Length: 310
Image (cartoon, rainbow, N blue to C red; front, side, top):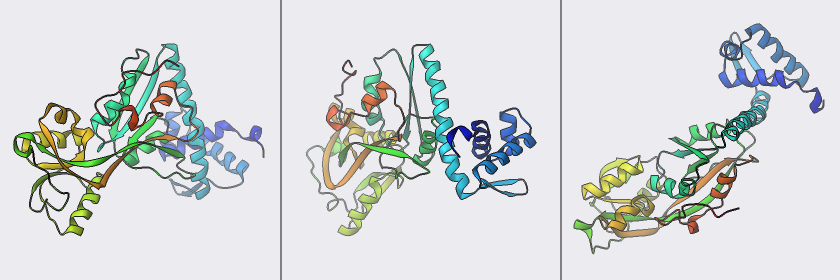
């Protein structure tokens, strides 16, 4: 069998059924009957010489081969949808940049990284947050162009992604200036029974911090566990408790003097990644964003407002 013998209409029908998990829903979406849909998927299976679904009554379950074929179909038709989106944007003279960011990612980091796009009137920017798994699934469906994360994502045949390292930052101990100015504490040795607001266990730094404290026999008094970095920043600013976080999260408060650096540990580090689909053709602005690292100012308040002309 060669490529011109592959019926892409049948493959499209298979993709829609696998995507929705239902013959009924897929038939409604593409305005055809369930029997016609089932017949054409069966023709695809006959052509490929292998079943793609395990059929148990009305329930459809992808076979191992079906999962692999679906991954390829997802790329084929996802790229088709991306192309149509690009054509629609081109018609209006606009470039759409769709960014996903894990909910534990610093908002300051996101803004620093995206700042070069702000002065380009041809760019339409969308930013969504969520769990890493959900965002990567949307990335693979070509509903997002890039995902910002604080951990890499392994790539395999069913999840062909690339994780580009953007930079890293040592985690700092910070507190309100009116209480902690001039103080220097060792992390974690001096934190026994100290009141702290902490990132939640969903944040990559929390297990690192807990492991350090356990090894040192230290037990801080945890007053709050916060998932959202913006909320953690506000609590650090208003509560008087110490917290551990990347300094990029509180860059403005450190600059204004509301918060001060109290200590740090070189063993606590947060890494930042940009995750894309392998072999995707990325829009020019996004391609330039991906070339930026911490050297370009994403981990500090100073960051270029625009790209150099290309």
